[in-house]
Length: 123
Image 1 (spheres, rainbow, N blue to C red):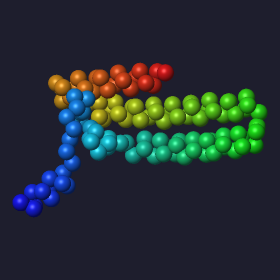
Image 2 (cartoon, one colour):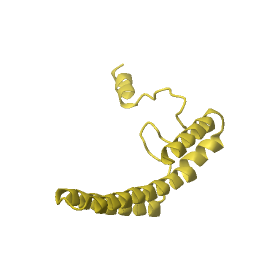
Image 3 (cartoon, rainbow, N blue to C red):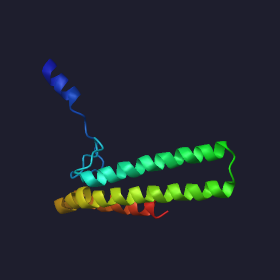
Image 4 (cartoon, one colour):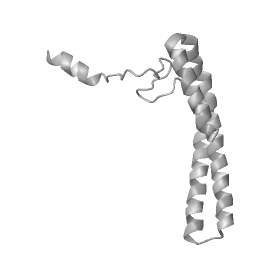
């Protein structure tokens, strides 16, 4: 009996939500696949963005001209949108494609997820 309790404790319970996709490991928050070049590009961009944000912090701390800071903020926002586009492409090519191919409830949940993502990124 102890072994079954231990095995049950190690196996995470999946919540039953209709938006879960069998194509992506949504419980563990892992993508089905990530193109290594895309991942490297995204990480490089995020490191660059982190540097820009540190620069913004310094500009505010130094009480630099507000318009200059706002221009830099817009630059950071555009850089983040670029990373978002890369990751959206990966999601469409892998997770979404597999879920839609599976059909049924999986495909329906993916369509809902994609619409939600589109609306969130359109703001």
